[in-house]
Image (cartoon, rainbow, N blue to C red; front, side, top):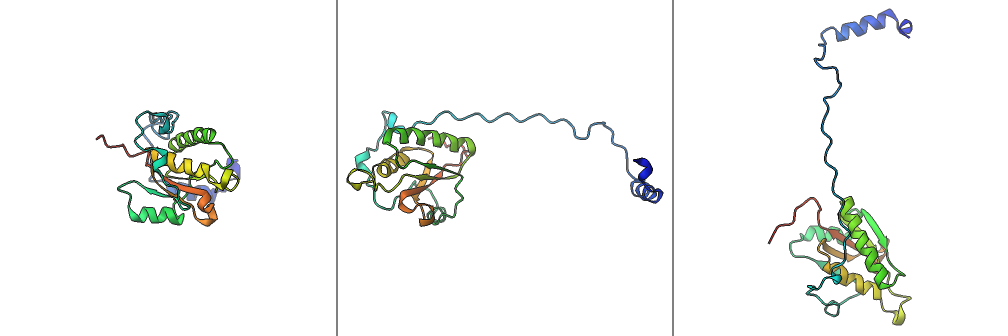
Length: 182
């Protein structure tokens, strides 16, 4: 191949690199230590399993439009969530499931959200049109479960394009921020 290079090209190359200095080491990049792997989060259980739950399901009122916000969440962030302006990183579809399997799937979903460092998720719970008495059983359960989960900062019913009152956007705690000890 060296014979394929014209002498004029070689002269131009030599002219361009004439003031270059030879590197002192033979490696291209010095070897860097590999970063420690991130620990895999433990499987999350929804707090209903715990004894010290201070909120009973009967105390949570479920309207057609769902909205819940923890203290300290900025109005602008809530407005972005309600408009669907925060990118949904992960989604789970629960509608059509019975309550117990849905609760287990939701716990696994939150574990996966934490592992992937998801900030906003969408949960499809359905509107309850096929439930007995046409009451949204799963919607009521999701409304309760999300309030108990410590990673949930806020949630609201989705926009029409994302399922309307049959789905919720969930704003999750930033996993990179350490929780303050009380």
